[in-house]
Length: 112
Picture 1 (cartoon, rainbow, N blue to C red):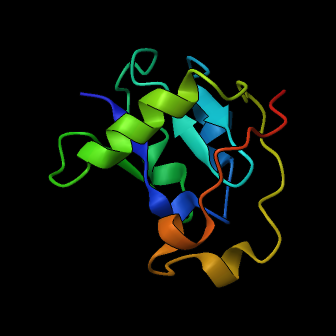
Picture 2: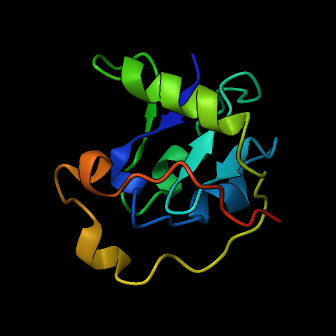
């Protein structure tokens, strides 16, 4: 099992999860984070820290697409290990449906 970031992170990008990760397995895109599934030690400390509830165990059904996205972009985007400010209007986008189709960006973030 590993934890993965799902679509509710898009346009929110809260980094509370990054701050508590003991193995620094988060990677930053332009408008979301992903977890490297091969680096995640399945400790689960990140899941309750996410204000947007965008982190789930990969054992939950229907998350195969998100496991692929996390795997792909964790190998491309820069590592992030420190908490930063969320995206502007993060609260407005929290819980919005269809964010992947409307807003997902393959562009990398800044990282550390």
